Length: 308
Image (cartoon, rainbow, N blue to C red; front, side):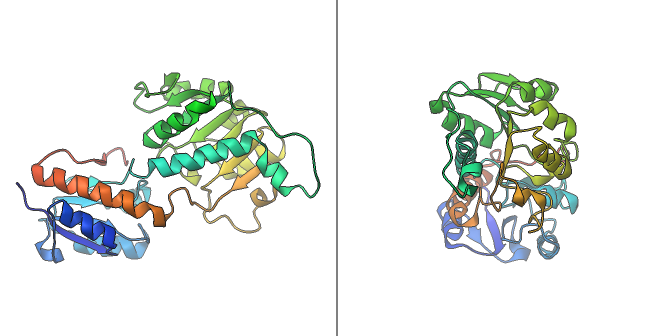
């Protein structure tokens, strides 16, 4: 079996340290390491990019990143083909999917409106049974979302770049099916990675296609959506509402119009908040160290060319 000589840092959570030992890895100094487990709440800020770059040397064969979205590392030009890079994609999917379900329920029951009301009002919204949920970016988060929504009697249409059939979905489509998905969906969930091609994926045309009864739910990345077009669509009733855990810009400035709209629910990027994530990340680390030592394919391998 191959040795797994690990440099963990800059943060060293106890759960991750224990996972490394459990999987047969050994913590070591940077110059002696053949793998890096990156653990930092700073993710890919300039200081973090510089810190990780300093750790790389020809002996490093694998780098495990602690985030599912890696567009910051891609923009920084960090990914290379000399070693294997893995992200945490899929590790946090159950937790993110729980927030999606909460958002769908909030939209269906008109909670953004009712929670702002200063007097009693009639109407509690719709039932979910029979509604259509469109999932744009039906990877791990999308699949976990479909599984959790099924007991409510919804129908799910899932879109993936690979055009493969998505387990649990009633209908699976490729990117060419986006327009029809929007027209047919009551709720559209964005859970796609932010690539160059996906930047501004949802603009005026897509929001108009979603229509005045459709809700947009974004737990992917804020830049998937043209914020100006979204605000306009919400103000003018071109869509019914939006639930956003991510925005562009992020954090959303306090004076932004989106905060003032009664058909908008915003949370501060808490779908994968750090506290509950450490156990999931630790399990991923243990699993990948075991695979690394055995020479097996790692979980969450990043396609350097694809950027996710």
